[in-house]
Image (cartoon, rainbow, N blue to C red; front, side, top):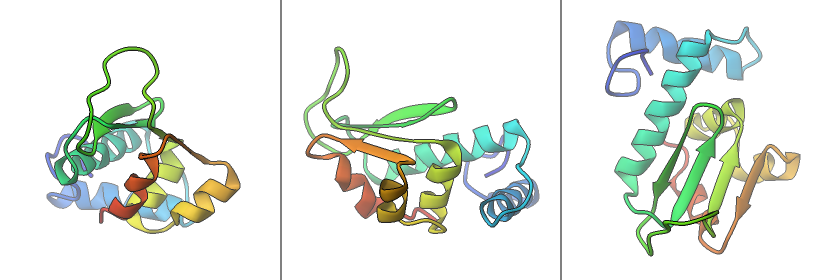
Length: 126
């Protein structure tokens, strides 16, 4: 999850950034905004690579949003299938530090629509 690397953890700097994110998820200090932004964007890109499509929108404000999972394309207004989480929750889900059920129960994750829960089956990504 390097600042400019193309793959999660790709290279020494990316591995350092991943270590920073994992330490933060374990209660350590928050990484720089640029590290968080890169980690979120790279994890969203990995999600799309694993499940390309346009039927579910995954949002991690303020860093990114993507559409994934095969199915009908949504083009106007609010999509019917949306997953949204803050960066800490999302990165916890991506790394397996946090479970979908825990994030949902705590209110840190919202999922609406009949297909939004399909994202849970794709996590963790790492």
